[in-house]
Image 1 (cartoon, one colour):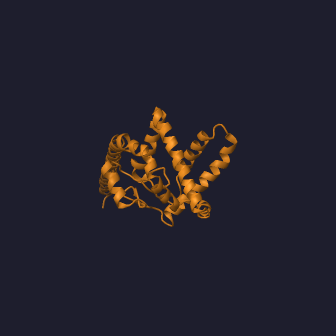
Image 2: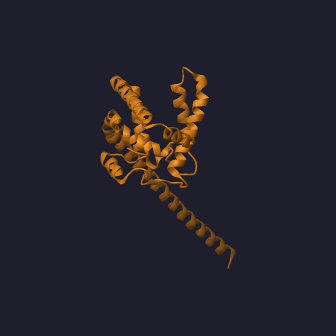
Image 3: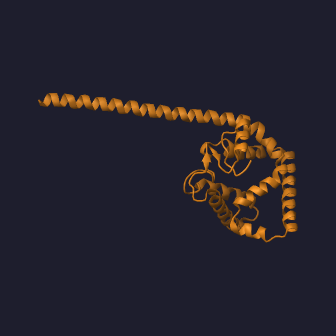
Length: 225
């Protein structure tokens, strides 16, 4: 075969491969863009339907679900906290839950009365992270072998805000908070690296998942409703 024919065939093959790769990359990018746009649309719809209308009403009625919440939380509490609770008498446990309920009711009344933009924004952000968050990104429910670093950054910010008047307590409180988060993750995941089923944690019952979806939520990044 002559050199000119060989060069011609080489150029032709190169062009063909280049076109094929270009088409493949173009399709892939187009698909990715389409998926991102679709996700953004679903998130926007979820925020406008669930977070703006349904979730605030649930927050105001939160105290009604206190016994159920405590039952769910018991399953994922760190071992030392479980041990402390198990050593309490029935009367002490009842008193502890009663105090928790009263404190929550008091906070809810104060916060509802204020109805400040800051409060509404905080509630909205919690809702988005839990119920309008495909793949439960940046939460302890995100699949993988490690907790996303953003979880600990958020935790430190929250503790720093709450203890701004007693800054010396922040490092100790953060250390304890981080330990609790790590223990909770272990208790939820066990040896698994993924506990999500269609963006909803497997700790949620099928009945709750159906209810959340019907109300407009697209994810369930929590241990209970």
